Image 1 (cartoon, one colour):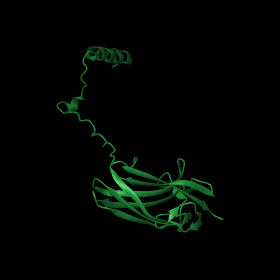
Image 2 (tube, one colour):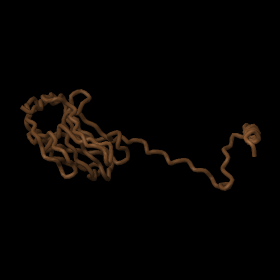
Image 3 (cartoon, rainbow, N blue to C red):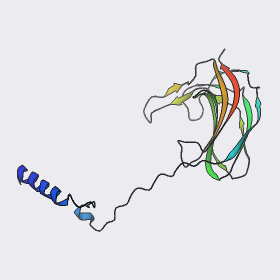
Image 4 (cartoon, rainbow, N blue to C red):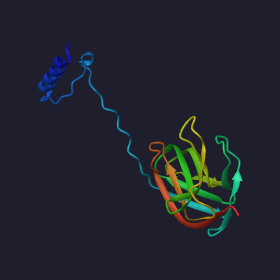
Length: 192
């Protein structure tokens, strides 16, 4: 078939099916019902309470930062402090099979320091307690296997934070926390 005949045949087929709004399937798939992808579950938001039962040092304190050795999954030394200790109670109104709790020390939109507690079951109406012992002020970033690992430090030291943010993340949506509570508490992190 020549190119001209092919183009004319294609134009004729297009014109004859232009009024048919139903999608057509390739010949080998006649009788197969097309399926639509299942929708992504909507992010959930839960009710609950977060209580900082104790925290030391007292808000307003200067906290010393040091170089910490890499953790079990890390390759680079990071900046951290073990001078901030807190006991935080969390109670939510739904069951979460694999929740993560993140405690951040924030300055505006920046999270200058952070501690993470992951993969724990939270039962509706039952208080779960986390004990904060180490806050990390830098973390490793990588764009995937084989790419170079870099150290990210969101805030220059000394960094003064104005609030403690506690978030609970559910397995349904790793982009949006299911519960966030903020506490106005100031700390200054320094390496001097």
